[in-house]
Image 1: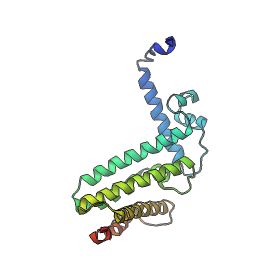
Image 2: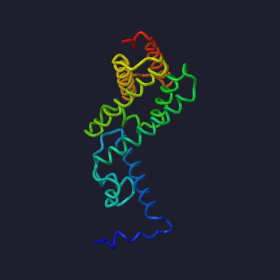
Image 3: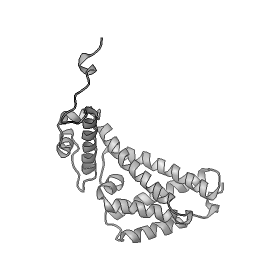
Amino acid sequence: MVDVVSAVPERPYRGVQAADRLAERRERLLAAGLDVLGAGELVELTVRGICRRAGVASRYFYESFADKDEFVAAVFDRVVGDLATSTQAAVAAVPSAEQTRAGMAHLVSAIAGDARVGRMLFSTQLTNALLVRKRAESSALFAMLSGRHVQNVLRVPGNDRIKAVAHFVVGGVAQTISAWLAADINLAPDQLVDQLTALLGQLDDPALFRG
């Protein structure tokens, strides 16, 4: 039996189609999620609080997300996806000899320009269980991409030495940025980029990756 109500398309409201209104509400919720998850202080994550910050009624939350876990994952994936895309573009725009610095400069600039992003991705004060898991998943992904980059640049086959260095790089950079955001490291953004670039430059020796 056909559901007559759902079969009838929603009419435009003030000239805006239903699908466009839904997409706009979803964007507002995701933006509010970054505000909450990237807050400087611990903020309780509630559907009511998210919707209040987004300026939408609570009932609209569930038209885009099944629950808070799905919402947190969507916010995290949006931020990581945007950052990964823009960083890859910055790296691809320069010669290979300048790519490490370009990647670090773009990453640090993005975090310095929007503290919410840095806190959500790197702050140790955020203890949301799903967020912690998503960070671990993204670290594994970036380690894999880093390993592939080494293979392509040095023209060497993949092996466990490359994996070890890739995980070392991703974990080391993440921990350093976390300490920088917590003010445990007192460096200007350019100085931090210089330091990270210099450290990563020590890992260019092909001997490190020979099995």
